[in-house]
Image (cartoon, rainbow, N blue to C red; front, side):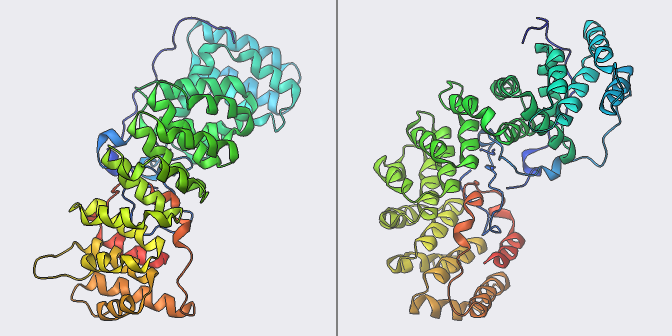
Length: 436
């Protein structure tokens, strides 16, 4: 694509919401390690961490509801918009007019109407694109216009408009994939923009795969991490191969994202790779906890003893919760004594409410006679939240005929999120019992 060398004028500044205001579930993102308590099956796995360092990777397909304004100002209709309306309505002669008006506006640096028209035309071209419309779109795609299309997508908060951009991206094809990659490489892009770019690449399908695959080898860790998150959503054999390669990435944040992606893909054979690389003993604490989470999701039985060791060696509730959950997923009776310590208060230990509920949930899934007795006693616990959560577990188990529910393994997306509100959301903990 040939185009003007000058960069487009900057878009009006977009206020970036506080990370704490964006709750999910993807990114992507990407992007913590401690999960919220038992999200619904298929919940978004957005990789959201409490520390700014961990907010680099949005989750693909994750809603950004907290960022959605009540209304968006309408853009002024131009002569170019009217020409596009006529073209889409079937009026003859409008293609030449669109090209002429587009050139004139680019010369005046009026890029918003041109970018808007490109998106409308490309989205309306159909799949596969109608040849005449596709050719018209390509004639408008100067580099500066395509960059502006990507920047406009980066600030788009409305779901219906994002979908229009994704349709347009599929019609534009490889040039759009390259432009989205460049957008992800821009370290000034905010979290909303990164998420939109990742979602667009994922929505493009096969046409974007060469670009996504090549991004995993990019020296820019932001780019590599987002590529791994996208591949975790795609989940095919080639994606799995590329994600497993990133388990050895020198950057801990990319390794952590690769572990999340493996949990989303859910191939049990990946557990052997996790153990071979010693990720449960990784030099990075967050990687170790995420490795434990993924080992639980993939039912890596060899991980039971290392997980118990990790559980007994930490006092951080935001690490304890995912470790308890992983042990519950592994359903090993040998873990019951270690888990019990976090369920039942003692004279010297008063675990946090969400920690106790996570412990009882793990005991619920393991289901040994001793675990069942502990659950029965907890049904009248002095902590009303603990008692309510345990009663709900037991009630649903009885309703299902006594068999432990099988939905716990469907929450791989949520498992990858870091301590996303776990420490200050007892109501969410109680609500989470509904997902069992």
